[in-house]
Length: 226
Image (cartoon, rainbow, N blue to C red; front, top):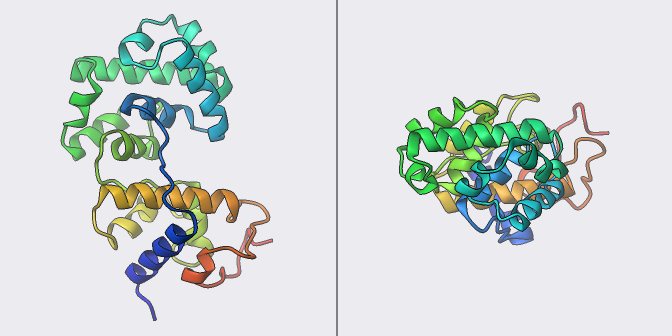
C-alpha cells in the first residue's frame, strides 16, 4: 500500500504533467497578489481580475495610492469582486496594519519571521487562514501550504481526509508529508485549483478523465459523488 507521502508526490507529478506549470498566483507585484488574495474571498477569480483592472486603471495598486483613496472610491473600484464595501474595509484594515507595523512597506513585512507574520495577519480583521497563507506563500515567499475548499473536496473524495476536515488538518497532510519548499507549495496549490475547477466540482464532479484517479484511484463512495 502506498504511503500518504507517495500518494501526494504521485498526485503532484500527475497533475504537473497534465497542467503544469500553472504560474499561480497571478500578479505583477507582491502588493497586487495581496490585494487579489483579499478580493477573491467568496467570488470567482474572473471577478477579481475585473476589480484589479479597475485598480490598475486608477493607479491605485500600491499601498500609498490605495491608502489615499476615499473609502467610497475604493469600494466602487473593487465592486466587480462582490461584497465590495466589506472588501474595501478589509483592504483598508490591511493597509492600516502594514502602515502601523511595517512603515507601509510590504517588503519589510515579508522579512518578518513566518510564525510572527502569520499571527499578525490572522489578527487583521477579515483575514482568515487561507487568505493569510496565500499572502505568506505567494507575496512573501514563505513555505506555507495553502489549502481551500477544492483541496478538502479532492482529498476527502479520495479518502485521504474525512469529509468536512478543517483547514489545519488538511494543511498538515501536506506539510507533514512534503518538503517545505516554496516553489513546490505554490505550484501544487495552483494545480489543485485547476483540478477543482475542471473536474472535482462541488456538484456533479467530472470523474471521467480526471487525472487525479491515475494517482489516487477512483473516489470512495460517499456524499457529493452524484
